[in-house]
Image (cartoon, rainbow, N blue to C red; front, top):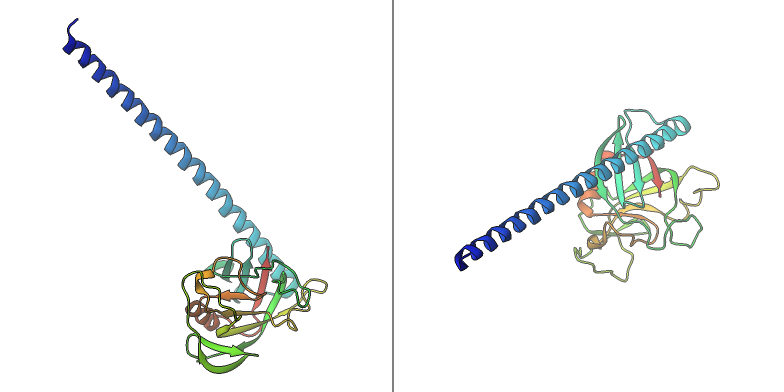
Length: 222
């Protein structure tokens, strides 16, 4: 057998091996995609079922009508869902408390359960406007889109003040001054970083402010 014949056979074997590795890789990739898709679908179905359960609670216990807006805040997902006619109208990333979940005064934790918006403040205020004790200071905060954590717990742009509705769960929320509000720390939105409130990006909190009214139900869940 000549040297050229041996080299040719070696090349053919190498090509066959490369093709085999490529096929195996493609099959593994497709299996992974299929598994991820099934996992995603399972998560979506679980989310839908959970949201339906929460909406049913609001409908039965708190008289939510299908044509009314409602808000669901998911702490685990750091998301706020605006609901109407049992459909998600808008989804916004948020930031809940970096200290976790709780309703004890002074804990700086985000309370769970059913609330409603008892006051709205800031209509017409410029984006980034700083509020103190719900009053417009006429000062504008610098908005950070990186992971900057400013020393002050600024409340900016819009305020939706929450009042708890469930005894033994969240009746202290109003006195704890828990709001849905804008923040200069936009780069931290999507992670727990607040002092108990539900923080939003400033443009998005303006949009939500326009959708909802005093009396809108807000369900905060783990």
